[in-house]
Amino acid sequence: MATFSPKLFITTFLAILASRINGKIINVPPHPSEQPTKAEMTLRPDSLDAPKLDHVEDQFYEWWYFDVISDKDGQYTSLDVVFYTSTTTGFDILGPSVPLANPSVDLIQVTVGFANGSVYNAYLNGSQATFIMHGDGVTGIYPSPRAMFNTASDLSSASVVLNAPEVGFEGVLHLTSTAPPHGPCDAAHPGISLELMPHVGWVNAFPDAIARASITVNGEQLVIEGRGYHDKNWGDRAFSKSLDTWYWGHATLGDYSIVFFDTLDYAGVGRSSSYVAKDGKILVSQCKGVVARPFGNGATYPPRMMDPEPLGLHLTIDTPDGHINATLTKVHTVLGLGLGPYHRWLDKIAGTVGGGEELYGLASFEQFAFSS
Ligand SMILES: *[C@@H]1O[C@H](CO)[C@@H](O)[C@H](O)[C@H]1NC(C)=O
Ligand SMILES: *[C@@H]1O[C@H](CO)[C@@H](O)[C@H](O)[C@H]1NC(C)=O
Ligand SMILES: *[C@@H]1O[C@H](CO)[C@@H](O)[C@H](O)[C@H]1NC(C)=O
Picture (cartoon, rainbow, N blue to C red):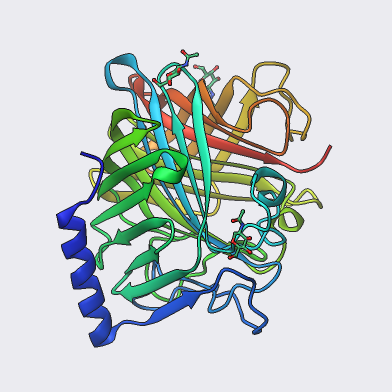
């Protein structure tokens, strides 16, 4: 288990073949580029999961985020893998977080949340990264460490493979999509805006998925089966300059797949995004109609950098099926233990849609708070 996947190899091989026919290849060297570039903020045809920067200049950042969250038999576990092509001046919380001298632009972060609440978190310094575009999917190859991801051309499935014995990690993650992709304000179709807020782009290729990871962490084998998710972010200005606070999360509540943002900039201007799908169909995808507020441990809104961790989040979203009123309750802290600008949690969610019966599920949400 947890090593080489022949199926993934074949998928990748086919992807490379496709790229020879109509694809495009981008190489991202480990040092910031001096070539001027522009961040794409409009969705082009056949490019949903593709890089949105041609070069990663100083102050620029981009990443592909994958997760699986699980509550099998009452055991809450998670795996998150982030493939960065980011400078530490661009995604500027990386600087203080990464325990590596001069981290590469091509950085990988792996985080495992164990059932007992302990966390494994490692960064891998990549020597370079290559992205092969095929349809709406992309294959990202980080040859050293031996890591790659592939999202299918039609975004129906995705895989991540990571073989990094130097940090005691190896494993595979597979996602099968259960909800259609979208941007901040619309279902995914060419021409939509991908601007979540000025200088911050976002697209969500896998809002919800059936997911399975088979991993080995420091010699211990673990299978994490549950819900999966994959999105990507990018920007052309230091991340902490673009926003003051942000709540982001994804959840499966009964048959509903939910993705949300509720943010504030330094002028107090709020921007949000709400997405709800059911039975593989989008009910709502818009940049309004959501409110996420922390509770517990003296939490106030907007959150501040040195606030203690809240116990959870109250979430309301407007949908054509009625108002979603849900509570995300923290089970484990996955990242950012204690105080600081960033936290991510694994949660239970309970709530109602249109005042109907109580529904339950699994969620993950994060908080950025840059002001003290
Ligand atoms: C990480 O990679 C960068 C770019 O190749 C290199 O300059 C740096 O020394 C590396 N850091 C470590 C700790 O290996
Ligand atoms: C928690 O679980 C992990 C994985 O099984 C294990 O390595 C670690 O020692 C455990 N920690 C505690 C405090 O029990
Ligand atoms: C949401 O549910 C909570 C707890 O059941 C309740 O106190 C609150 O009034 C509800 N809010 C809305 C907007 O329906």
